[in-house]
Figure 1 (spheres, rainbow, N blue to C red):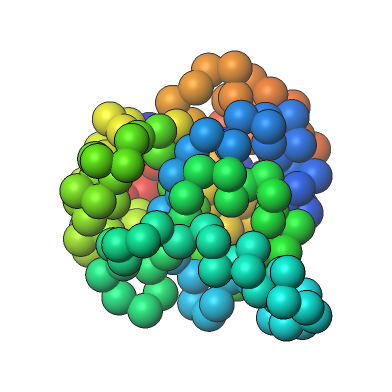
Figure 2: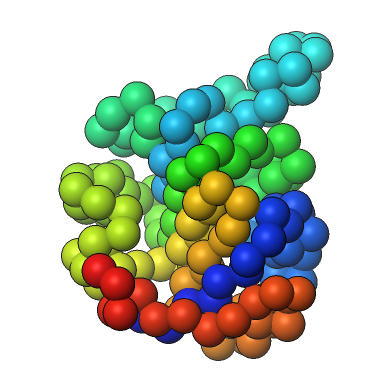
Length: 165
C-alpha cells in the first residue's frame, strides 16, 4: 500500500491540520504502549476526565490492555492531548454502531499492525492508518485528497508498505 513517511517528530495536530476536521466522523482503533492521553491534563479537572471517559463505546471491544476503540468525535477534540510513544498506531474507520464491534475485532485480532493482513484490512475498510515510530510518522490513507494534502508536509516522501512486510 502506498503511504507517506514524515521523517521528523512533527506535532500530531500540526501534521494533520489539513484534514483534521474530517476525523470527526470516524471511529478510531488505537494501540499504544501506555495510556494514550496526557495524564496531567486528564486529572486537571472532572470535566477533562469525563471527556476521556465519554470516548469509549458502551460495550468494550478491546482485545487486550493496549487496544483502544474510540467513538466518532474523539478526534479532533482530544487530539492535542494524545501522547504518542515509541510505537503508536491509529486506524480511522467509517462505520455504524451495529458493525463497529465486528469490524474492530477483525483489526484487533490481526497479530501485527505492520503485517500484510493488517494492510489488506486498511485498504478495504479504513480511511486512514497512522503509525508513529520513535520520532517519525507513516501515514496510509485510502482517500486521495487526504494523501495529496499530507504529502505537502515538510520532510515527507512516498513509501510502499509492500516493500518491507
